[in-house]
Length: 341
Ligand code: DAH
Image (tube, rainbow, N blue to C red; front, side):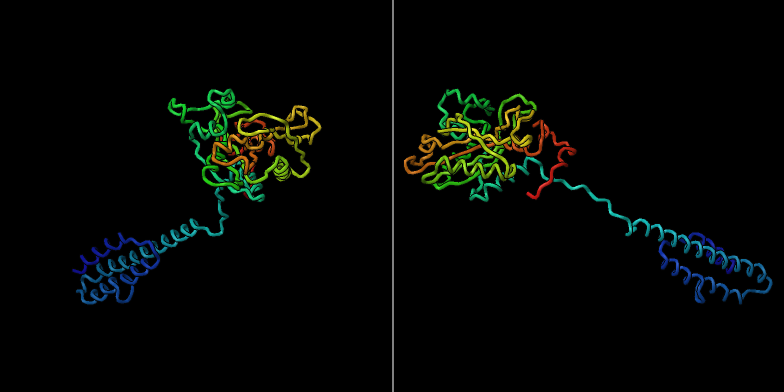
């Protein structure tokens, strides 16, 4: 019956769904084109008996306008959704920049130290942080029970006095002498550990760069020249150095090196405590006993060594007055340092 077909198609059209514009167009063709389903019912209408014409004609016209309205509605909805999508990927919008990290100031200064000595022909090597007594003390001429061992408060592993966290990178001197025959010219950057109370000036973990040069006829003058070059590269060409006699078990003679105060230039200020000088490293001629301990003949070879604290140099370089800043990793602190290295 035509009447039933009209009702069925009405229900079908009322519940039509489509999202994309081409889906809507396909529905328009399916129902409203000349060969569409609504037109097909108009064809069939031609065959109904005259007494039904009035009623069914009216219903057919209703169906047609319902289909036209529904298709128009779907078309409008699809266009609106499309506009919204285009907004979601607005290519003209400026990008939100993701913050990128930077190098830690201790790494920057360490890299700079290694780079400066690299220009003088020093290679780079590293050694273990967990060490044994031999490499940290005994081979470096610290006799057993010698009070010099107390200069550096040591963390021991599992109460075994032979296994410890290295207190200085001088231990890597020993490893390097085991690894290769002279001539040796290398720097050893690394992390060291001391059982010390943490304060503005000291931390229980910090970083050092050690240097070692062993060859024939190495003199103290060679050492001084290399350290002068380093100081000028690190702190600027106006800097002056001063070597003061000191004591380390593994060097003889031993010295500590000061640089003219990086803040006041030597006149005297709060940073250098009025002296005009700042201590930055320990150094000396490698003690013949250390060469012997490592199978190097001190009659044939001589050498120098030096060791410096990276935090100390970074504090002077950047005017940082509390070493703890380097370990707290507050981004507001870290963001202030930039480097090519
Ligand atoms: N190892 C020493 C320290 O941690 C620093 C040092 C002094 C290293 C003299 C050396 C040196 O190589 O010759 O305090």
